[in-house]
Length: 222
Image 1 (cartoon, rainbow, N blue to C red):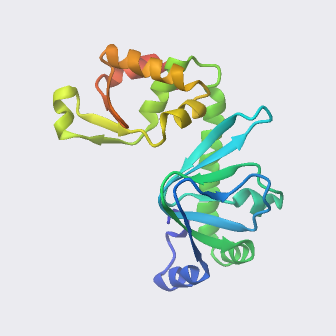
Image 2 (image 1 turned 135 degrees about the horizontal axis):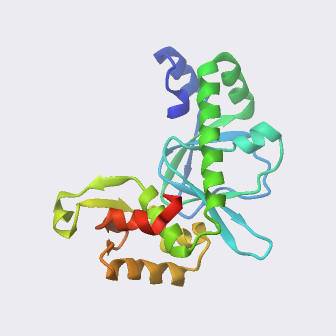
């Protein structure tokens, strides 16, 4: 887990001794908005989506947590109740630390504090980026989102272009919520990209057939 890298083997064993394992089945909540959470949760396996329900009842996807990511730091730093909820996208395993144990770890191991703050800084930068794209068009937001996903080289996909593919990490309805558009609009623009030869879609796998075209569509966002 990134925030514990740099510790000695003995120190890592001590940290592991403080962790309480928690399993969350697909579709279950790790926590719900409004709860008072006095623990830090680090994702060990699986993925969770962090959401916020607006007063209108609309659910917004705030971010997706992968192995190594953590949540619960807001309550630790402010002492306030959580505003967001976390739902498992697949069967997931968490390592849970009480806030008291976390405070002791941060005091005794400055390297953990530094990595903790670095992770929070990256999260803040990501949030600022999301705010910056609000005024962009849906095609611009979609192109920028596809370009931001981790890519792999698929030898079998070489016949479909450059062989670079990305995996959609969320159901399309959640990606639409993340991009602040409707599922129908998202599907329409994905289809337009595909018909234009920019991408090839195979369920959750997207072949980036023309990366230059995607960069051009994303414009200043890329």
